[in-house]
Amino acid sequence: MRILVCISNVPDTTSKITFSNDNTVFNSNGIQYIINPYDEIALSKAVELSEGGKGTVTVINVGDSSTEPTIRKALAIGADDAVRVNAQPRDAWFVANQIANYAKGENFDLILTGRESIDYNGAQVAALLGELLSLPSVSIAKKLDIQGTEATIDREIEGGKEVLTVSLPVVVGTAEGVAEPKIPNMRGIMGARTKPLQVIEPIEVKELSSISRYESPAPRSAVKLVDDVDQLVQLLHSEAKVI
Ligand SMILES: Cc1cc2nc3c(=O)[nH]c(=O)nc-3n(C[C@H](O)[C@H](O)[C@H](O)COP(=O)(O)OP(=O)(O)OC[C@H]3O[C@@H](n4cnc5c(N)ncnc54)[C@H](O)[C@@H]3O)c2cc1C
Image (cartoon, rainbow, N blue to C red; front, side, top):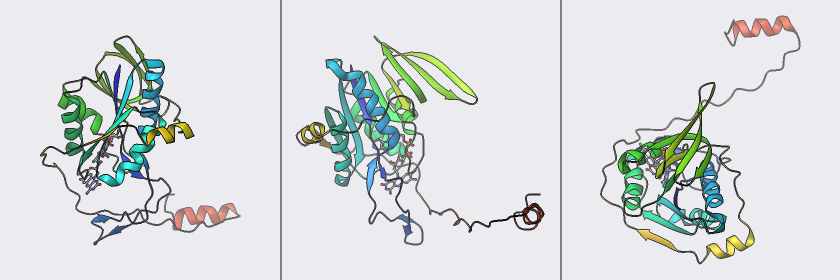
């Protein structure tokens, strides 16, 4: 089985996010980048499925050369090889087209993405890939089993779960529960240095959206400790205005 895992390079969850140029540009100075956590789950599942010679795992990232440490980490976790589409990601349409362009000649049985990236949170790439490659796509997978040429997927739905079966090839957007994230060991880290990382040039694609400006959430106000109920009721009425 040939598996493609799409890897997004995102700011570490502890990063302090700031903007420059009148809130139009994300300030990447001093930001530590990581594999998008949902993509780490997808990759861990792919490695599990391919273990024991049952398949191969290729990771793909659309990004400039600064994303290579993240790609090498994916190789250390267990991917066999990697592809970087040499372009600054512009929007989900641009990213999905670049990945689809690579994937269409490669006959992957399974294409995994995360359910969403934790920076732009578009939750679009998996569905766009399905459409661009004329493949079924399933989002928010909480469990994924493969038997022969069929995938059984548990999906999160409002107030419950949906279990569905789908024939391979398929695109799946994975969520927590699909696999335990794997931590690279020393052998993996050493081996990752020499695993193949192919750089390909992007195709011409016009992005469909552009960001006008960013806005940070309002800073949280200080906590006020209240030790009697009457005062609490008074504050909920006059300050919080919730009663
Ligand atoms: C309007 C707009 C402008 C943007 N401008 C910039 C910019 O100037 N510079 C910049 O660096 N980014 C920019 N981005 C972000 C970048 O384009 C995102 O990578 C892209 O939009 C996909 O993010 P998403 O949140 O839509 O992905 P989602 O659909 O939430 O991601 C789902 C999954 O798709 C896969 N995926 C997402 N992105 C990639 C990727 N790059 N490579 C491989 N797999 C991926 C991952 O598996 C991920 O878990 C912009 C995004 C938008 C919407």
